[in-house]
Length: 231
Image (tube, rainbow, N blue to C red; front, top):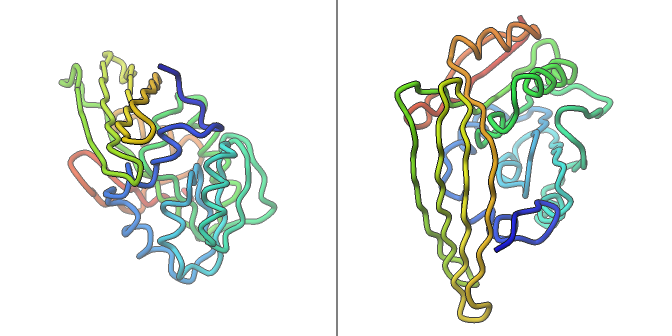
C-alpha cells in the first residue's frame, strides 16, 4: 500500500473525474457563471471548469501539477495556475470565485481565514464567492461509506471511514482499490483531517474578513452552496 501524493499519478488523480462525475454542484455553478470572469480555487482536473464554457473567461488554481496537466489536456481555454489557494496572486479581480467539492473543510480555521482573505482581494466589489460547505452535526460520531466506479482499466472502489470529535474535527481515512485485468490489484491510502464548523461559526468566520451570505442552495442533505459577497 502507498499513501497518495497529488503530484504523482495515483488512483485518485487518474480516476478523479470518474469518481466525482455524479456530484451535483457543477450545474449550479454553470447557471451563475454565464458571461462572467471566473476563478476556480482547487480546480483539480477541471471537472467544474469544463462545465463553464459559457463564461467570459476561466482561470483555475491548484497546487497539483498532475491535476493541472489533466485539466490542460481538456482544451478548456482556461488560464491554469499552479499555486497554494491560501496565498496566490492573479493580478486581476473576478466576477465569480468558486471553491467546490467541500474542499474548504480540508483547512483549519487559520487557513480558512487566509483563503477567505484571498477571495476578498480577488473578488470585484459586486462579485460573488460560491462556496460548497457542510456543517458539523454534533450527534454524528462516525461514518463508513463505500462507492464503486467502472473505469476503462477496471473497477475502482473508494472506502472512507470518518471519526468525529466534539469540536468538529474529523479524522478520515480513504482506501482506493483498483481491480484490473491488466494491472492486477492496486491499493492506496489517504489519511487526512477535516474541519467542520457549525453554521454559526461559519457566519462569524466569513464576517471576520468582510464577507456575508447573499443566498444558499442545498444540493443534498446538509450539503450547501453558499453565495457570498462583500459585507
